[in-house]
Length: 230
Ligand code: DX5
Ligand code: ZN
Image 1 (cartoon, rainbow, N blue to C red):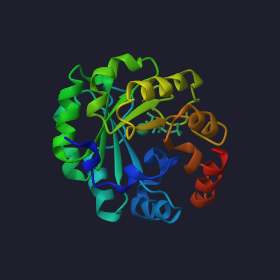
Image 2: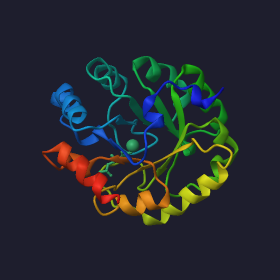
Image 3: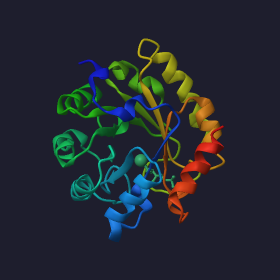
Image 4: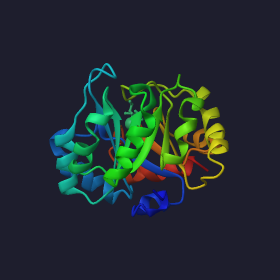
């Protein structure tokens, strides 16, 4: 399948692109939160699905993705932190996911799950926890629209950024030499202080949770983060 056949504009957006992680949003006012983020200029939403098995934390699942799909046109980037991703790809796509990523540590069938995501019509990506080397996904780079590098151990928002993961970006870029449109995403501990090192290392999409939701003015937080990248 040709990766550039994906109809998502977000995949062509000039970096850096900041994706709010909704883990810390006001779930009693999900529609309002989506509207506020849209008004603040964000181009996509990052949704963290945790099952209490693959990670020692529970967040939300299909019904929240489905509800958000009803109230926003923004692309939904769904980060699956679940033990058996293959079992749920179809359901998350049906719920409204535009991009689906799963953890390299969660399954040995990387190619099978990536192909399943691609067949569903969603953008496909694989996620590396800090301890997982780039070599573990080298064989499936061609099947990825994006690779998500975790800069904290997956499971909780509000953790401290791990600069040691930044070396993975040049490794991934070198691995994907024949695939210049591969998007490199980073997730965990991104804030005013870590934006620039992450962007300088090669991160193009930056997931931000507490760095946005700790502020009442999402537009100002967005602008400040973009300015901090320079
Ligand atoms: C961690 C999640 C992240 C996280 C980001 O498992 O994937 O998206 O919530 O939150 P901050 O920016 O607070 O690290
Ligand atoms: Zn995430």
